[in-house]
Length: 86
Image (cartoon, rainbow, N blue to C red; front, side, top):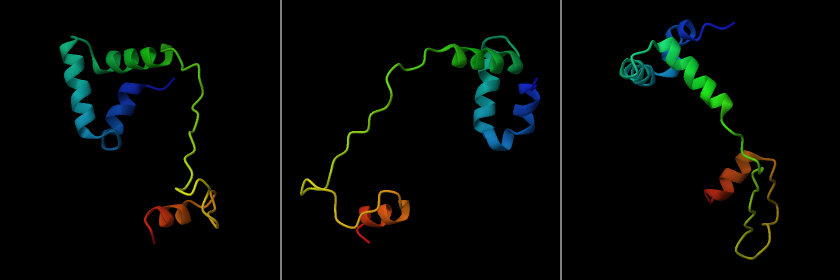
């Protein structure tokens, strides 16, 4: 099983030192170890109820009420260019 305490300290550059400092402060406030805090927070996150409804995208077409001709929804770069009026 993954030792989260060792993982967090080994990857503090990935997590960010401010986040690690905040976790250490919270552990001290709770009078627990960083390992206990991280494990507790992960347990709470995993036990949290999952949303029952799926995300629904509310499509808003161009001002004309239609999708602009020539727009490829599967081409991210082209979409960004159009949104930036390039």
